[in-house]
Image (cartoon, rainbow, N blue to C red; front, side):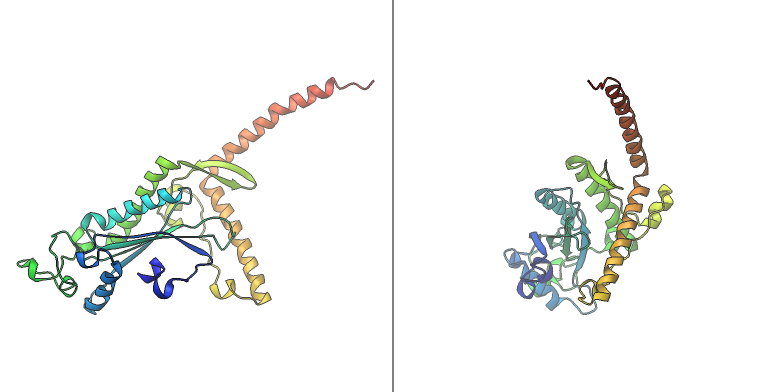
Length: 284
């Protein structure tokens, strides 16, 4: 909780490179409505050692959406995964500039939630809230725990999260930012801004592309001041840039080829005008 909300000992964490754009909590018991920290502290204190205290999901948000739309999108995702089940939750939106190019934004959502639900609207003390639920006497036991099994997803819960995230993000992009401008080999091209939850391997199988995974620069090299390490980082950056360019060509091959055709057509249309202008260019 303190990490995603940048409070207490995390108040200055990454403050020079990352912005906390927004944070809020939802579906909290009365005793923590005005202080969500109390809820997460109680979760740590009273949850059995053999049980999960909370769940945490990190979701990359589209940089094509402005700050207000990102908040709207984050609250929609929160509702989809835990809000509709009245699970206590806290969201935080972080944004930082990409380390690779130092320019592009990388907004992302942190969603922290408890599977202990407020659906029955029974007010329980902090200690009782995290006890085991009693089906016959709910008021005497802890809050109902809505797990992946209870929801009917079981081990497929991560697949559910990914597919629903893709669906909801694309709904927002279609409404607010249906296209984006990318650059391939120095040519700017307008393409669909829709995202996919598929891995490169699965995307290749489905669409017949040849997307490749981008390697991660080891942090030990990225923040090293050693000249040899810096040379290695430069080589990493060059390789990553090339892979990303190739991936763009693979994913937007049709758009790129169409842009090339239009460029050649435009050049051909301009060429006769140049010839004609030279034909009547006399010296006196």
